[in-house]
Length: 325
Image (cartoon, rainbow, N blue to C red):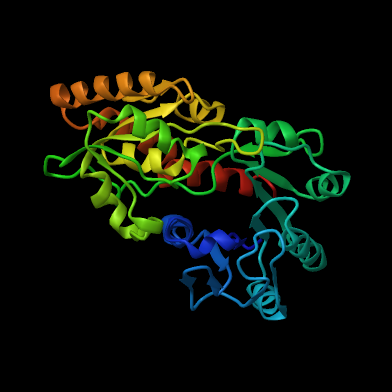
């Protein structure tokens, strides 16, 4: 390196504002000592990004791959590190691992996987990584048998300068900002919330990401009563919880392992037993009383800024990347 660390970040999720805003912020935030190149599909679902690259199998996280055009651009960028935010079982992970070896770049992988043991092939992918960033404790536990070089950190930070407390009194008691799927606990909330006014997601979650601060600020409590299952478990606090807290909301969530692991100690957060609508109702009632007594959950916001804001996540990530050299 010549004093500047060049990082190529690869992920299909970079098409979403939550993801690419953070990496756009990183270069100026580090005064140019870290230079970031984004490598994402030019089309993915509802997203179209002019700075992206065409891919094979668009829309399929496991099967998609990039064409030569992307690799030529990355090679011209001359990255010190290629940071792939996919899973070990994704084709694009192996594709960029081979490329990193061919150009002499360090290779870092981000994983959320917190359910299944890795196959021997996937284990070999992990062994070839210079660092594996793990989004939760279970993910790290699954990686460790294959690679001791891990960092516990989430994908991107919360933009706490955008998700800020509003100036006006909320119109609703509760907001549910998530997929209307059983595992996300919306049915539990429906049973718990007969006495509360609830702001539900717009059809097909059609509200844009830039609308979310306004939506959060129209409620006092964010409810996310997720339910773990053998085929799906929450992988972290949930960005909706973190963004709502950053807006000064109280949070009523479940005791899903990854949620408790991430939010334990955060002011204004209550964990109820999964699937228990009566416990959830009681937590929401308590938090509405807190709002009436104290107003916005400013201590919860301060906790998120300190632990999951842009600066906090960037500090963890950049320190780990610099330590590779």
